[in-house]
Length: 100
Image (cartoon, rainbow, N blue to C red; front, side):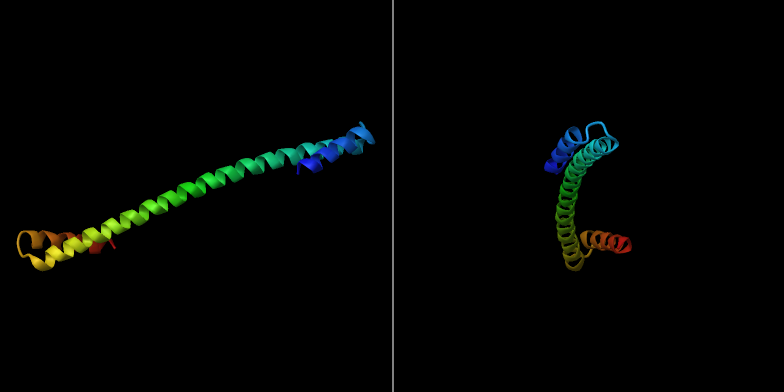
């Protein structure tokens, strides 16, 4: 991209200096340079956002595993014990089923 911008500047300043064509080429070169810089910034923002999304997904997977382990423990206590642990475990499982 830089090569194109340099060639536009060279041609506009050389053969077409201050003509409408030369001015248009300079304007085009400036616009291309601005768009290239904007593209770099947007790419960096996208990479940062993608990294944040990946981190959030990793945390969600870990949280889901911990929740599955906790539900497994509740099911174990609900099946093994009567009162008070089994009753509380069954009540918590019932609440969790309503959420799903």
